[in-house]
Length: 389
Image: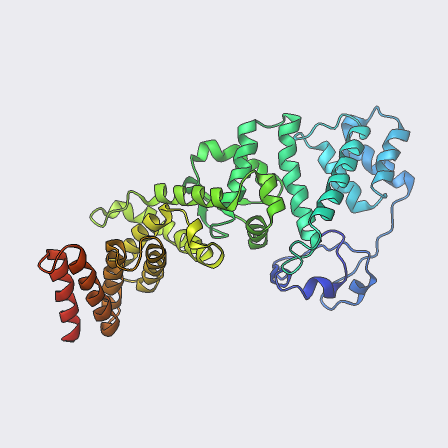
């Protein structure tokens, strides 16, 4: 983590305190002397490099600049303050075959341009996210996103890969942070380029056919307008895309075909996660209509496997909230949802609640279909069955 403030300003932050400090080692660069006495951290005081040392480092790392004058290379060194880590990172970028800095001046121009953009972002986003994470985290994230978009300006990656990378980030921000099947998000072959671009900036990791993203990055993308603007989307459009992909992923599930269970099992945790986030952060009128269908499909799967009734009830409850808001309490869709919830309660041996819901269904069915309709009679029978136990 680069150029952080005092230990207290970082550790006191609730979200940043959850950063996986204990997994391996974390390098923190800082100008604050307070870190030198921080328990559990080993300090190393680093001075700026001498002109000769800095020049030798750049010459050794960036071979395509071997014919440039020392004066121009030293301008590059001065721009970065001759700090070892800053120089090493910049040299690695300039030496990469993914970028095209033909001369030190090219990098200096790009570096100044980025610094000016960051200053504008910082002024524009003053106070944004400070309760969840420090500005330094947003700054790092914005730089990474800008690097991905730069491939479009440099024509070093196809436009569809850059746009695909932006869409992947928006989609991933609403799914679980780990274990997202790549084929849930689209054609794996078509997504290979976008995944490579994002992996190059450390925004996602890819292993065993699944993508992962740090929860802090997910939260920032979901919450911060400045980032959504960079990614070319909105909460509403992103949710529609996420739910559309989830619906496509689980649509083939049927209880009569065991071969369809695997996809339902892979999609269910992400559907539960999305439904939970939507309930917490989005008003009912902004819910994608297809979320109702997806929640119902996955809830049916969870009931069919007879070992996840609690999660099935979560999804049915979300359906009930949405359907009650949309058509009203006495609509048949609301009664259908209550019937399914009653089945779950009955399976969980919560007989009184099951009876209450079955009875409510019978009332609505009687109004809509008539007292002698098969749906009405079935609901009454189910309610009577609960009372006998």
